[in-house]
Length: 312
Image (cartoon, rainbow, N blue to C red):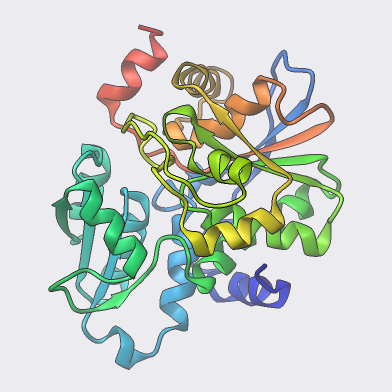
């Protein structure tokens, strides 16, 4: 659990970088009263700017002098490149081979150097917090406590706008987002249920919770590129299992329907991971009452989005 004092400090530290995103009611036919936390409205269209900014601003000048480095499916890479540009630093972003073009283009527009590697090499960088042959301050996309504290500021904002949510659903990629949000909620509103949501094509957390320990699962890369993996990080599983009330999966079809509904009812463009929480809520998995869905990001290739919107 991340200390609430660290999350509150992070909010002050990143106030001039991260947007205080709105919490809006979704008009839907679901039994639940669904609310959307729209992290799509961040400067980089993803929540990742919160954690990255907190970690970089906590680092010393000596740590930063060689530039910034991260391993990312795209959104953390964009956040790190954005911060590096602001600070006049270099940024090296290692991405898996299936990373979408939209996210790579966005990183390169900000001046970041993108290095594509096989999935196994990318995952190794996440496990070891380093990239072979690359110097610089490594901003871990998931397990850095400063990153998680920055993510936790979302939880503070949710409770300010909706003081008594019954459940909060959070997409699960590596666990940093749900750990941060859940830490804030456990400190301020312990009665709120918290669930993680993964794509059915790579539900490593669901498998780990069922087995009581991290276990290997079948993983199929898909357009839901910001979530899902073969295995949860052990250090994150130890944190997450103590904070969440459970985990759900959403099929690609359910996620596509959620992305479509967001565009139709709210005119919000969400990427695959950004639609996971809503997909679970629409299926009734968050229960009834006031259910908050974290729409984590909106960086999706237009060539991927178009057939989803047209239901092709």
